[in-house]
Image 1 (cartoon, rainbow, N blue to C red):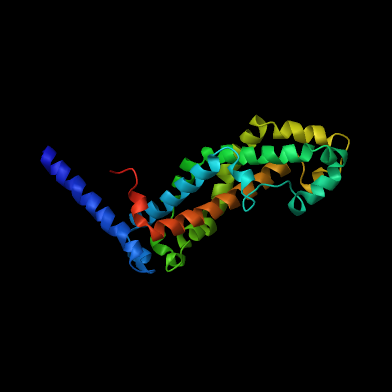
Image 2 (image 1 turned 90 degrees about the vertical axis):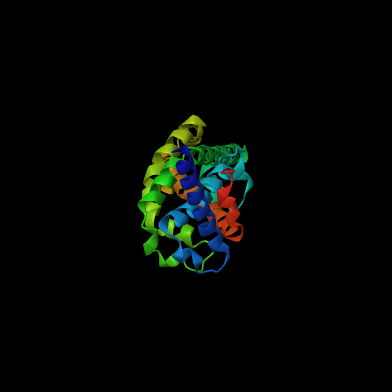
Length: 222
């Protein structure tokens, strides 16, 4: 009995290796994979992206995904904060926003895996011949769902890193801030949007790398 089970496991593993290897053979190969192969690809990309962005300071260090205060890349907020900006307080708040994004990324794997499992990848023509096609399909098809599920994680993280407290201190006596998106709700919404955009940016890179080196999907099996 154990021998039969072992044989089945080996055949399943071999089938996975063959399916993943097909990604390297032609740009249209992904479209011919079963849905499990596609989910393996994008699941690996999401895990890799989230792992990298969950490293403390990762969001802030990379200008391509750095999370900024709302309003013209943070410039409008800096003007409204006045003296607080000149004292460097907005820089500290910006760093806290990025810390919150990293914390949320560290808890987001189940959310992304669930969204990936819920999609019908066989109906995704955008996957064909594009190095980041699966990521873009996930973004367009499940972006709103992911935003809704990521938002509470971001809100909790903003509270944990002290971002809301810093915002309250900077906002005292300045009623114009809420109109610029600098309320607690506005800040949470902005950070969620920017964090999600950064995650998809990293996922696209991870997917492209896995297509070039599909053996990476098997990492940890042996």
